[in-house]
Length: 137
Image (cartoon, rainbow, N blue to C red; front, top):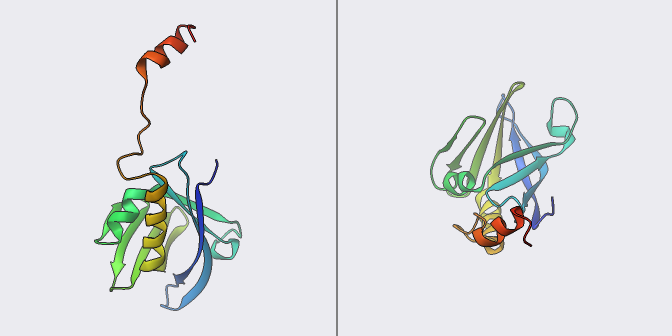
């Protein structure tokens, strides 16, 4: 997968006792998979000592910056004016991670510069595609 953009940032893993641990994370967006964003956490943030990448809808990230959003494995909500919380569920448990909202907004702005909202769906040239299928091109 060719990465269109990659943005290293800092996050805070919130432990069950309320303590926060700073983490370097990488936000990724690719025009080849325009509906999705990826967040990669370092090995020290996982139970098995392996780097972990979560993939979810770019729209979920956009929605979660303004209001609680999400269903299933990923939930995102604003936390005051300057922060955003992401909650990741897996069969091992859950993780709460806090981000500076400005970093997530900058990442989304860059992703929309790469592929504008509404421009995620590929355009179809039915005549050309049909011609290829039938061996004409």
